[in-house]
Image (cartoon, rainbow, N blue to C red):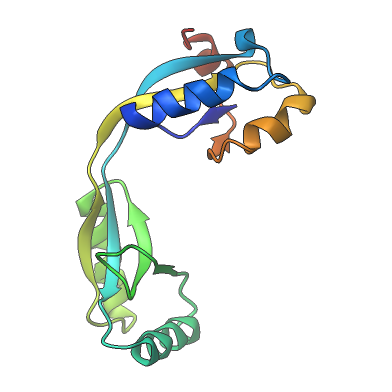
Length: 152
């Protein structure tokens, strides 16, 4: 298993928490340097009111589009109707959505790329799952080669 890419500030905190987990041996986890790529979203907002937001979500549901209501201080009240690894991918999807009748959406950069570290647990013991999930990280499966590349 591996966590999401963590910023330098978060690595120190998570390392301290991991070292405090009696159930998970220190030899079970390692760190790997990684880069989180930039992300782009198709954005609708900022809406003038909660009523306007609710009207737009109803419209998106009627169009059978998947969306996320954002709670980001800079973008709220707002909606994302897709997240992408490149601006070109986002623009291509926006063009398709425009043809389906979605108006007033635009592509914005959601997050810049950043270098950080992941926690990697090479061999997961079922007894470790609950304590590791208690760290508040997003865990995903990783390949044996990714796990082998992790360094203490």
